Image (cartoon, rainbow, N blue to C red):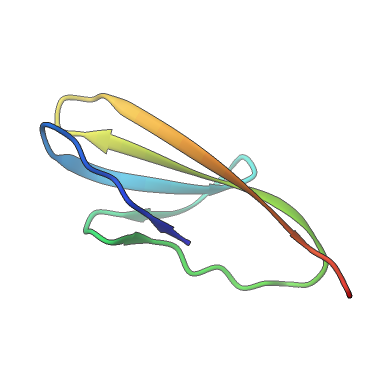
Length: 68
């Protein structure tokens, strides 16, 4: 996954969540998460960007792996 984050101030970090669990934090653009696919199932990934003054914004992506 790759998150594109920009801000009027400065993006400090992007946190990546799989479900409710924090799985990675990236402090340099491009903000990315490498995630192994363990098998079939669904996961909601959320990226939360934080700027230098504490503002935050988030975006989520639903991913489902199924056998064809």
